[in-house]
Length: 234
Image (cartoon, rainbow, N blue to C red; front, side, top):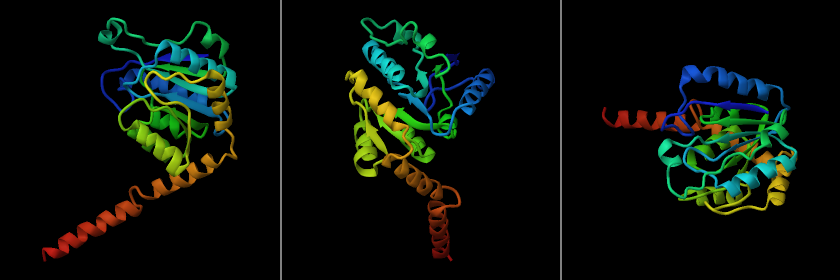
């Protein structure tokens, strides 16, 4: 199994990378994705703050193995002060998992170029904690999302994605909740189905989002508003 550890500092939407040291790592990640069929890869990342417990990590990795899907798993690297916290339960990838998943999975320890990964044609599914930045990036990329919110507004974001927009599948919720590995494996397996309604809606929503950026409807409306303000001063 491909395995890359990337250096990280404290800030970024996912993790902040040292650009010089990460260039080769990113090339390896993209090369691995280039060899996979379109929309066949599941990208798993829980953001820059969430840390899975050991039981959650065990269930997640078991589900990934059981599901048969190809995947990129981003695992957060803890700061020294976090590692030294008393009674802290920080999940690590189980022994043997990477050997079992050789050729089918790719593990990134530390920073991940999330936007680049999500926009790659091989990636079709995003397992996410539903932080707002990740939600926007997933929508723009047009991927199906499996939601696992863990706090704050993430629960509402997940509800929006699943119940209102219809572009996501509910996987789990809660900082300490533990899904059943069989059920999570089933959700992972069906999420890559090209005929699922969530995928069709995700593509439509992506097209709408892209049309609203520079040169699109939002840009045009803002430009017109600025012009009207200028006319008022004449």
